[in-house]
Image 1 (tube, one colour):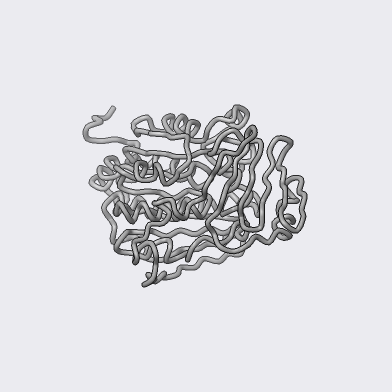
Image 2 (tube, one colour):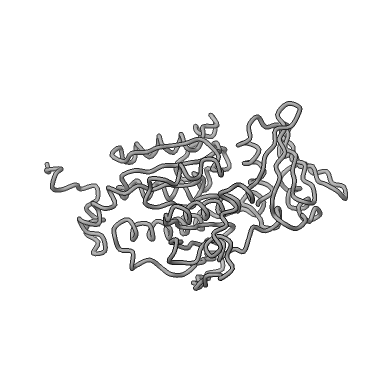
Length: 345
């Protein structure tokens, strides 16, 4: 037996590591973290931080579990997919079984300009596990506004990348990515695929940086953008320079937080129909998008639009300027999820 006031075997191996120790573990156990997105990256991040003993974890995700998620999303099982359980709900249930001493707060909702400040308030760190550009630019804006550190992460195919963003000290996400690309230009996991090891490696890099921050070892944080292509055996690190004209960190415009540059949704007349409007400049290459989506469902195309049906119930009609009409969905969150899943930006 042991005295729990003096020794907790759960974290003993972590405390033995010279960079953390007992004091570092105490700081980790008192820390509060937001994980934005509970898909592939989010589940691996949540699993690792929960096992590491982070005291409080807030998770936000708008989606539900599907069978195709199980290849790479570690907290879910076949029963979750069969029941279409919301990811935030299923994740909380699994995490509490892993470590019941961690406080888990879960939200089944879209992260948007109306709730971004609320979700990012009261935490020491935000972990990016989103899957689209507007959410990351919004996260960048709100963290700059609140002065909250966040850790960017993304993975596609066999490629993963990560960077720590500290407001006022490092370049921000808008310095790295100069505005979102036109919808459909950048592939998504649903159009290009993704390998689980790329997810695991990216999440591991993010979590390692998180543990440095949460245990008080901030000076150990990597100052680089780290990229890894595990299929091609290529790992690189790049020093990103701040942009003097950056609208987010230099000019403090906060367009995404104000809602000026975010995806807009409009409920249309008729049952289960929404319009999603992108603020990205440039036109979609309809021919290229039709070829990508043609492998995933039925596609009809003319010079002005493409109509894509991933199944017998839902249809996405995409116009050149990135505007989309989405039919067969009952909520705004479902419309945005479908748009991000197949259109990309």
